[in-house]
Image 1 (tube, rainbow, N blue to C red):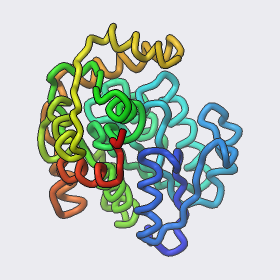
Image 2 (cartoon, rainbow, N blue to C red; image 1 turned 90 degrees about the vertical axis):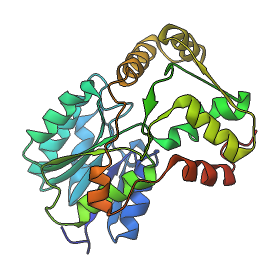
Image 3 (cartoon, one colour; image 1 turned 30 degrees about the horizontal axis):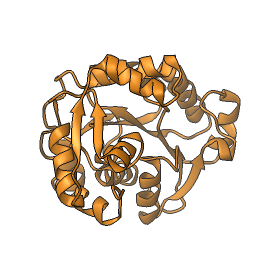
Length: 277
């Protein structure tokens, strides 16, 4: 795929990953077509898909709220088949590293006839500076989360965006491949909060809770019971220890360098005021 006049659809273009992929892809010369409710696109309504897909060359697919959510496989497969029928063969799917419930969506994509790439990401650095986890640190100075002392190789979204863009701009090199991405070192959530505390100059703490206790926290935020059940089950599965390993080879291959370190991220985010009370 050449960059000139290439139109890339980005689902969730204003979201945590989509916004960064859009920025990186634009810098590489691709034309961005956002796909969201504001543009008339809805994952839950297949009738909205064709107008979004028609005339594009490629798509970056992010399924909300999570690739392992009920219905993800059917939606990804349905959209991929429509995309191929409309000539949009190049599809890149964001998946979760070690997320067993993502298999249905991955299988749906790989059997769709598309020229596919799957990008399986570990936990994002930016989860600590954007969204509910960031709110907890900023407002209360405490991160309450059901991760115990499990380690995770946190991944910077700048690396993810760069990898996605390279897979789309370097021809057929990454077609038919699943790329596993992680950061360069294993850290506990307690380690991450300590890094953030050093970078921000604030006294911050981490409180490990059980899944049941965290379900109560989510319920207090007003989340519906089915979403609470899905999120707690997903976190329990992802953070049971089976992801305590590095997978940096694919970043080295695609980007020709090591992944960004969490400490660098924490310093930059602190400078931008991410955890300012």
